[in-house]
Image (cartoon, rainbow, N blue to C red):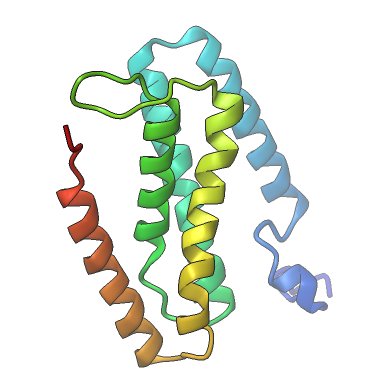
Length: 157
């Protein structure tokens, strides 16, 4: 075993996101430094850091579905868009042209995840038995439907 450090001996270790203690340690250090950096940085750097965390979470979700489960799912952007739109409406400030409820982050953050989960539950009965190219085509259609809906949302006066 000494000459083969990348040999996995158990499935749980092989399929984990951080497969060894070095990766876990570096991730913990980077997250701690990132959060500490938020208290010292300007608004631009906080926006940049938040965007990078959002993309990392989306990438991990895509890795779990495509890499570990072997499914071709292209609709991650729709669910991220639903959560983003819900957080903007629930946490945003209402003006004459924008709907917003101006709630604190403690409310809009979980509610944005719940909104994306509800959309996922509505879509799940259609897509749960699909696999391969059929799943890819249906989720690609969801991307186009979501893109159309998000680009055409407007407030009625």
